[in-house]
View 1 (tube, rainbow over the protein chains, first blue to last red):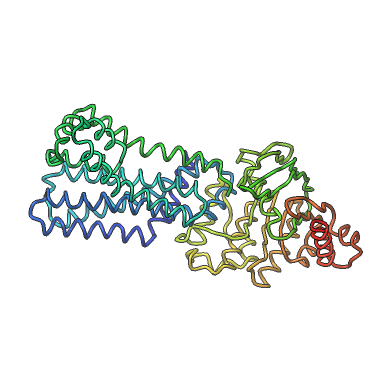
View 2 (tube, one colour; view 1 turned 180 degrees about the vertical axis):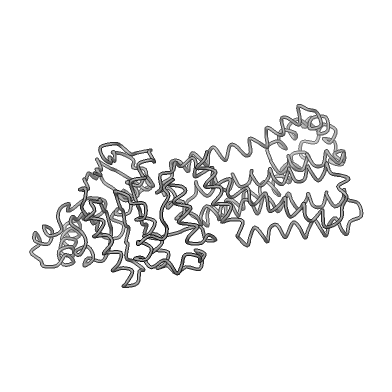
Length: 262
Length: 240
């Protein structure tokens, strides 16, 4: 544990000085400031911000994570030549990469809201927004680490990372719509519910929409969504699914890291 | 003492090490030489635990080190290409390694003067030249007073003064009883430094013995000629 803390400490002092983290944080600061300043209805501003978060955070986390591993191979080799076990190094690198990203997002968004003079009346939706951004950062960084450790070729790995992001954030919605449309004459609510649980971005979106109580806009499955995700069982299952999305890539990533030849 | 026993390693379809067994003599400088892709770096990386052999065992001081990590306290390693966190300063990197190894050091020791790193101490890694990164790498390999020193192409990229100082330091470490393994493509350097030589071709050991024995056995005066001579013979032997 002491070793992991040491590695995280050095990773943080390295990453927090990186221009990219500053640009990333400034992006959320500016975006939040503009949205909350120029939109009179704070709920609408939060909804717009949410839509951007659902696209930007997975993309940046997955690209930043894969590039980070590829660019750090020689550095990883150097650290592994010290009396350090691979587990501590993996956990240290992972947290040292995802914590600054999550911190960049949270600090930028929080400052943007404060600067816009928003009174935090709808603090619950802001809180959900920050939690979702935080969770998506950790989930997509773990996916990025798994890809970059498994695939040695940088171009191929980056390509896979972008395809996974595209699948989960864009193509997946299309597939769900297709299923709903094509099988509209059948009782497919449970299947659609199941499909939504399999995509972390969809789960994040549902969480947020439920808070606004506008899930009825999602069509005839809306009521079912409220019934399921609104119930305590639904909330627990969705939190578990988000955790599964984080832990499975971390476990497989670590296994590959443990066996990998550097 | 370092011993490799029947080490076999494949990277996909490439059979990089073919049933290699060897013993590195303690207190001596052993040079590993061979054409590009002959398996030199894979041997070094296997000893360090960076590469996991498919078969065989690696013993250091009589104990198997496969899957272990604490034994690396005994080893100082200077890689072919040095890479450190870009945004940290030289001093911070040194402190980081010292912290990770849990071995406090006197940063401003004689070694830092010898390697001439003092002017670079407060510079960020990304502003350093390739040569200065190599100097930092050499410093990290030597400062913790390890009993085994592994140097992969140590003088490549160093200026003549730094290169000469490093060679002097390597010889000094041998007289202190350290076990040293190095690779180099500069044969005159190997002749100058190494006691023993391990000659690899295509993942197999073709010579393992003293440098002067290799030169004498080929009837040559220089190591470079003896090695070239042997390499031609092996290549022709393989293809004829």
